[in-house]
Length: 221
Ligand SMILES: O=C(O)CCC(=O)C(=O)O
Ligand SMILES: [Fe+2]
Ligand SMILES: [Mn+2]
Image 1 (cartoon, rainbow, N blue to C red):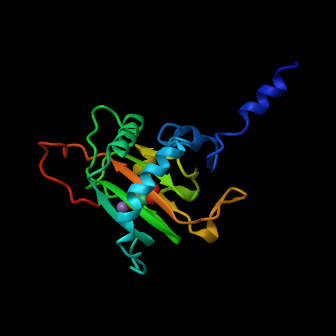
Image 2 (image 1 turned 90 degrees about the vertical axis):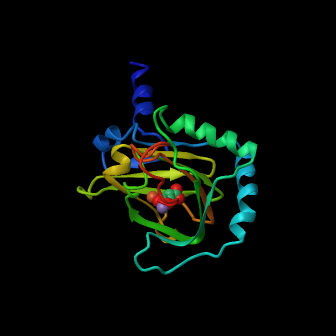
């Protein structure tokens, strides 16, 4: 049959930016670990990095907390944004969060230097709700998710500059996430050289912690 070969070819590769230990985990997490390459236009990337650069530059990169998840980073919690950036963050909110979810405010901005990396961790359930959504700027990177009980189950997300990733539900609670260091930064066979990367991360509040809930969470997760 003329058409069947082409159909098979089209259905074989998964999305080019998500890999996994097998078809079961890929299909199970299809809506829980999502990457949207090109979510930001070049102009939007520029808007965000221009706005963030002066605030980040005032800070020093941090290293060597032996138990810390993140190495070679500086960060800020940002609540005041330009109108252009607010419009971008609203697009993130509409794309990643449900109408019933309240977002943690301020927004977390993390600047990883080229040697910087994030070790496997699960964001604290005390301070973060079911959904984490992050924009990546400047350098591509690989985010790896590993099931906390079944280490043979994993996913890798290719995070190009301008992409949005969303972790929710099982991907957020049952899997650790990490950003690979330069030496280990491969997406399958493909080397993904790490430069400086800035991420802008929105999180939902834990249920019951919205406005009128029992208390304000501390700013960081
Ligand atoms: O940089 C990112 O996209 C993720 C950061 C992260 O995992 C965290 O701050 O908990
Ligand atoms: Fe995290
Ligand atoms: Mn954190």
